[in-house]
Length: 305
Image 1 (spheres, one colour):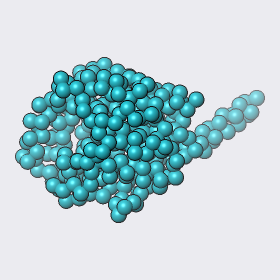
Image 2 (image 1 turned 45 degrees about the vertical axis):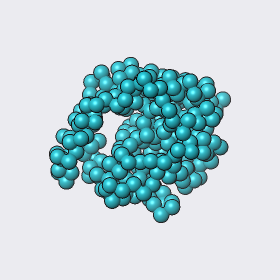
Image 3 (image 1 turned 90 degrees about the vertical axis):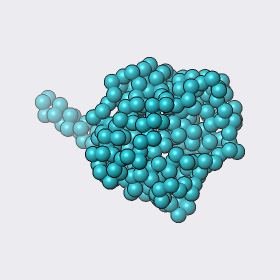
Image 4 (image 1 turned 60 degrees about the horizontal axis):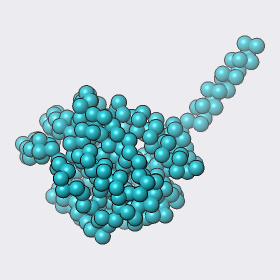
């Protein structure tokens, strides 16, 4: 009996190892640019493309977060937008592309992975890109999850703008030695702290992210080219054309996109639903991971039924 039980356990462990899919790297070459990507999970599962916000690379979607999402039965892809991480970058102070180009980049990644339709999860700028993609490439997008973002178009003029402390902090960027890792880490961590909410700021995790990004980026400060990003006027104020099932996830203490922006999204995207993250700022806080992952999983699986 012991022999049979041991054999059963051994076969179960072997099966788990065989089914476990390792993270894979891939460089997508399109329109004379290169986009660095990584994937998690089984390629046969429903695909999720994670679209990051301005100035941050794909590392903002923590590797463990991606793996947890993949473990829920999805094929998850994260990637570096232009001017961040290992993707194509440009001379600092120039932005020879617009937000629609970044949207086209996302679809190019799906093309390269031979994915006909995908679920988009976009945060901040990534949420705006996702909104445009859902309109321009309606047949390619199965669902939207909009994290910590606002509408691509007019919002309520009474809604507060970005916290001025964040603007004041980044007004000191010229005083930073951008070649010195410690100087950069100190400055960037302070900036992320200002964007955090009432939950304990994850200083150690944030500093680890900043240092890893500093050392892997093709040109770290080219990320600031995102600050002059333009274009996409033809897609403004067309949220009512979004037909895909849409989930909105937003922190009540967001310092970049005020929480009241969710009302604009809910009012204009028919059938959209909201998950509120109490006390969360403009961040992907570890304490919210399970809520976010469970929310995305239920949202996608319900839409696929």
